[in-house]
Length: 173
Image 1 (cartoon, rainbow, N blue to C red):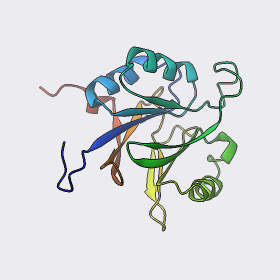
Image 2 (image 1 turned 30 degrees about the vertical axis):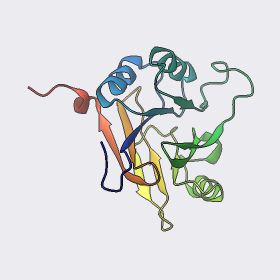
Image 3 (image 1 turned 45 degrees about the horizontal axis):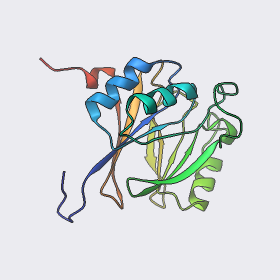
């Protein structure tokens, strides 16, 4: 979709804590047709399967606390990348203590000049902006609830962040 400023609108699919819920992940990719996928751990192998099955879509992933033996040694627990024109700080969150508070995560992401801090681990969907305008997003667990999230960009700025559930991916009669 072309925007008034000439940029194209892009979608980043954010998934976490999949715990082998590949059917939900596949359905999300097929229905939402993202320009990129981010998998925030807890079953790292699931992100690798999606990358293999959808080779035209870049997949970015970090390991979670359940991935000690599921990913190659030395895989970074934090990624800071520009995806669809926006700078993202990506981590599972267990090393930042996100089940207790988000201060450390926000501080680290702001130091990296990220436009959004993405994390999982809690299985609880969360989306808010800090006073500086940075988005803080947890997609929830795509393995248990299941939930996911989308970030829409114009190639430079984040236009929207939102969550979706299984029912949102179903065909309406």
